[in-house]
Amino acid sequence: MDFGVGFLSNKIMLPILDFFYGIVPSYGLAIVALTLVIRFALYPLSAGSIRNMRRMKVVQPVMQKRQQEIRERYKDNPAKQQEEMAKVMQELGNPLAGCFPLLLQMPILFALFATLRGSPFSDVPYNINFQVLPREQMEQVQPQAYVTKPQNIYIADNVHTPVVAIAPGGTKLAIGESTKVEFQTTEGKPFDALLQDHPDYANELHPRVEVVNGAERVKIDADGTIEALQPGDVTIKTVIPGLAADKGFLFIDKLGRVGAIDSDGAIHWDIVGMIVCFGVSLYINQLLSGQGGASSNPNQETINKITPIIFSGMFLFFPLPAGVLMYMLLANIFQTFQTFLLSREPLPEEILKLVEAEEKATAKKEGTDAIPFEPGRKKKAQS
Image 1 (spheres, rainbow, N blue to C red):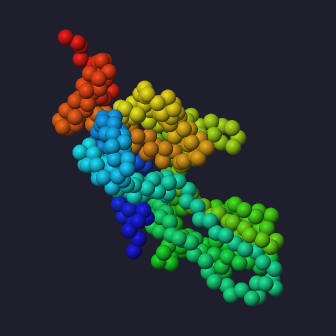
Image 2 (image 1 turned 30 degrees about the vertical axis):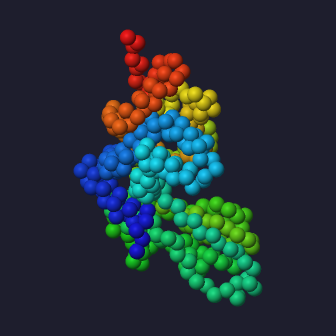
Image 3 (image 1 turned 30 degrees about the horizontal axis):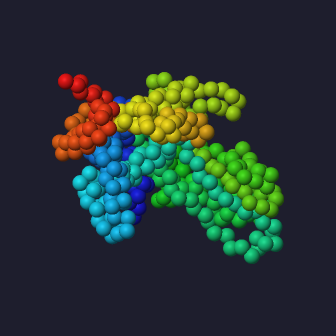
């Protein structure tokens, strides 16, 4: 039994999605609700990661100073050096500790991402690689049906089932031979019969067929029949339309639309707006976490400034469906608000005393005022 991303998507995400759609029949609101439920569920894990990152940023100067002293003091004794380094991490914290909560939540986030990239929000593709052979070679081939992995397909509101694509005669075709990709449920019920049971969207969900590779080697008729013409490899993509792919929400024109710019140059400003807002929220999140402010390292400061541009700009070159972008924007706004709340929490008393003592020692040695240990903390006025 699969307990991975597919299990989480089909057994957790989709039931939550169906539940909220049953309350408010809007797939856009269902995405909002699903995103918030998952983010609240993961709040303790992400909060632990944010707290550790904040703690490590505060103690980093002290840790680096102590580690350098240990390296110099025990440069000829690696075992003792490692022992003292471990003591420092035990006292000040391990920089890698914040990664563990992040790793725990990754499968859930991947499952949510996969859910929003599939039906009903996006068209669902099935790729099959065919090989066209001369007839004399095909005489030595034993035909065997090829079945793809099942994908969850919405055939009506709140009604979905796993569907597979089948090449009945296998993926090897003789020149002049014809075949047709068929669809059925994992229980063996034909997809056409399934649509007849739910006629409201039957006309919208008929699969379409296109050639991804080797278009000169096959011919596709209007009914989807594939005729082999020349020997070679061919990749056929059959697509079942997403039930909500063409539905809008608020300022979003179509939840399933992929890309900000069409091949004809038309710009979709709803997607451009979400990409810009994503970059802005990412930058604000950096500022709140102390990563986007001024740094003593010019290179690091430059990286901090361009990171939001890179992460948001990549959606122009690696486009995602509008529904997925909406989820990512909502999740990032939630993360930014969470970072803001956690940045108001007082740091542990032992950390404050440790860092302030180190700052006073440094200030006394250099004859300067103590440096604020965290962005936003004001220097104390001299008496």
